[in-house]
Amino acid sequence: MRYIYVVDSAADDELGKVISKISPECLYSLIGGLKQKQFGIDTLCKEVSRINKFRSRIVIPSKGVQYMDSGGYSIIQGQVSPGSVRRFIKCYNAYVENEIDNYERVFSLDIPFSKKYSAINTVDAIYELNRESLSDLRELMVKYPDLRDKVYFVWHFKMNSQYGIWKKLYDELDLKSYIKNRAIGGMVGMREVTKKSFSPFTPMAYKCLIDFVQNNETEKEFSLHFLGMHINYDRFQIALLEKLFQNYLGDYVSVNMTYDSISYAQTARMGNSGPIYLDSNDANLWFGNVKDVPERILQSVYGDITPQILEEIRLRSCKQKLVNCNSFAPLFISSNINEDRVFERIIDKYEIAKIIVTSSSSSVVACKLRSILSEIEESYKSMFNREFLKSIAENIEATIVFDRWFRCSRDLIQLDELIKSFNSWHGFADLLK
Image (cartoon, rainbow, N blue to C red; front, top):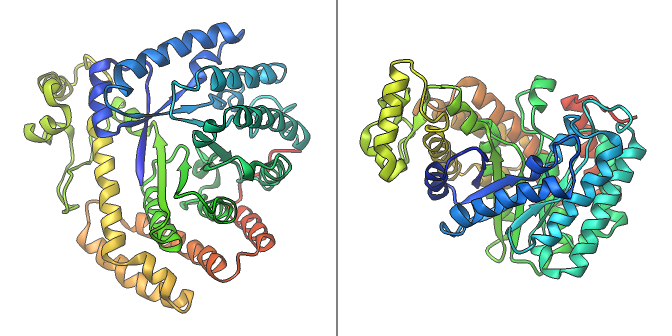
C-alpha cells in the first residue's frame, strides 16, 4: 500500500522536493484550469503550463510518478453548470491526448452527481454525460494503445443507481478490453453523511479483482487506487485487502494498491499538534506535538531546510504566524506513511489475512480476531483505540462475505446483489431520479 500525495499548487519548490523524497508519487488536479465561469482550452492551457513546470522542477528530478486527476470534483460541487459539462469533457480529453507524454497515470473523468444542479441528477443525464466522457477516452485508447497503461477507470457505487450506470457503461463500451488499472471513487465525506465508521469500498475492490482475473489474464500487475482516503481504519483495510489479493493471485501477479488524500497537509496547516509517528518497528514511539520531535528526526525528513523548520516550530510555540503554512506537511505525511507501515506489520504478525482465508467459518474468524484485537489494543495503545478496533472488526466481518464469494462462487449476479445489499446497509441516499 502506497500513499500518493496531492499537490498543492501554491506550495513552494523546497517543500515539494522534500515531499517528493517521502512520497515520489503525486496527484495533480486539472481543476485549476476548469473551475472558472468561462473555462475553456485557454484557461486549461495556463494550468497545464503550471503543471508542466512542477513536473520539470519536482517530478522528473526525483524520478517520480505523476497521476492526473480530471478535476471533475468541480462538477460535483456545482462550479460547472449543466450546459457547460460537455465543454468540460472535451477539455479533459484534449488534455489526455495533447499532454500524453507529460504524465504517467490519469484518472477517467467521472460525473456522479451535482450538489447544486438537480437537472444533472437523473439516471438518464448521468448516463449520457459519462457515456460521452468514456467514449471519447476509449477512442483515445484505441488511437494511442500505450495510453491503456496510464488510464485508471474510476468506479462509482455508493448509490445503486450509480453502480447500475457504471456497470452498464463498462459493458456497453466493452471497457474490459481496454482497462488495465482501476480506481474507486465517490467516498469523500461519505462517513459524515452515513454516520457509520466502516470502509465502504470493500465490495467494489472485489468487483475490480474479479474483473482483472477474468479480463487481464496476461497482466502481471493488479493496480487499484482508492480516491480521497485518509481515515486510519480505511488504510488498515486497504493494507489487509492488498495482503488478501496477493494471496489469491500468487507470486505471478504483483498487487499494487494506492490511495491519496489532501488531509495530511490540511491537518498540518490547521495547526493540529499530532501525533507524529516515527519510522520504527515500535508503534509506541511517537510524539504528541510537533515541537517535541527531536532535531535528528526533523533532519531525516527535511534535510537542508531543517533550520527553517526549527524556526517555524519556534513561531508555533509562541503562537505566532508561520512563514509558510505548509511547513509541517512533510512531517505529517511522513508520520502517516510510518503508521501505514505499522498496519502492514501487524497484519503480517498476526496473520490476519491467513485467518480469513483458512478459517472454516465466520464465527471462527470472529473468535480468533477478538483475541488479536485485544492484544493489539494492549501493545499499540498510542495508535489503536476502541473505536478504531471496532471499525477493523466490522470491516473484517464484511470482508469475510466477499472472500467466501471470491473463493467459492465468483457468480457475478450474486456479486451484484451483495454490492446492492451493502449499499442499502450503509444507507447513503440515492440522489438520482
